[in-house]
Image (cartoon, rainbow, N blue to C red; front, side, top):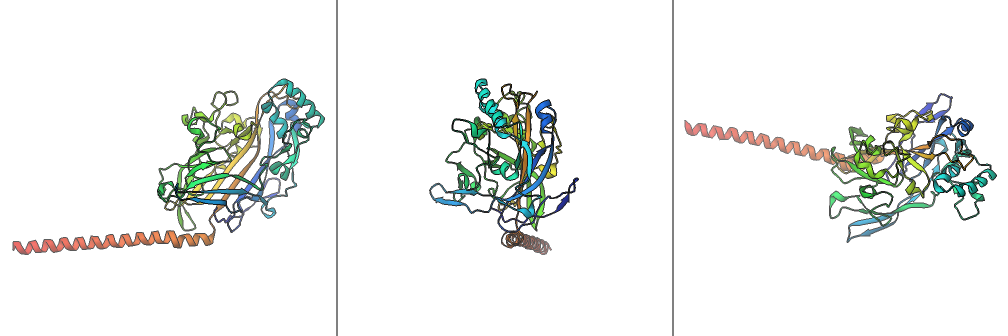
Length: 441
């Protein structure tokens, strides 16, 4: 992955606490910042189905890209290379506003999932007795570490048949791998450099229909060289269980290196009404309001039926009705958008920010006491993350010397040769005209 150097800026929040918008670290690491939506009025929501008041707390920072790729295998016949990217997370206290033991009031993930996983009313009735016996409710108090990496759920622990009793937004994560990637090395065709051939041995995902199910583009760390502004940069993200794309936004200078900024457009998460190409990402009609809801992606098929929805942070570019039942959100393009800064000659991503929000759908359930008072569906924000990195100073200097500098030198040589050619052409024309003039005389 990229060498990273991140800029640390202390920000004093309204309540007097200090947060960091960004941070400083030089090396080969990528960091994830987490902001947790702490629910302020859990009892009111569970009883009166009122607006959910949330308070964003964070960032809590982890180093997540510090392990080298494993099982790297070259295939000279297909011109591909296969590898595993191990997952690991190390908490960085100095880059966080608190500790992993900080407590939050959040949605009860196990209880909220029951109506989706077990729609049968008889089974819900049985599970309701276990929910009450475990003293579980619609909301719960959990530490940061439990919320992210897993905890033993008291309700699931009472279920008499085999179920996974550990619950966590990213469980399991440490000591796992995303899957086997096979990418083209470009030896036979430079336009295919870094393009994913297969993921987990397949060219499609089996979550979506039609072309939405295809694995397109790269992993976003790099793209085929000679990137043009008119190109859509396609990349696959296992975090959102789909391929997606970015479009040109601006020309920038990054540590003396000219780069193109490509941004994730609002059309990427648009409804089929706004973007017909997204029709195969709409998998149901009720929650999506007949496929007119925009700004969220239902990835439940990718999460074993759990009601997980992905969006941009604070429902940026989302339908107004998404944020209407949630108090405390304030979407901001600068802080919540996703972008890639790509060096156009090599296609390398030299700076990036991947920002995503994880939400859980909660709906009324007459047989579940903890959910029976709800009068409408909620898409409840749990947290949002910012995974970002920038090329370090040493690597930037090396890049300037070995790539940018040589390209500039080549451009200078080209200009000199062109100038010499123009001068020689003018001199030739003058000599030719002079010779013709003498002959006439």
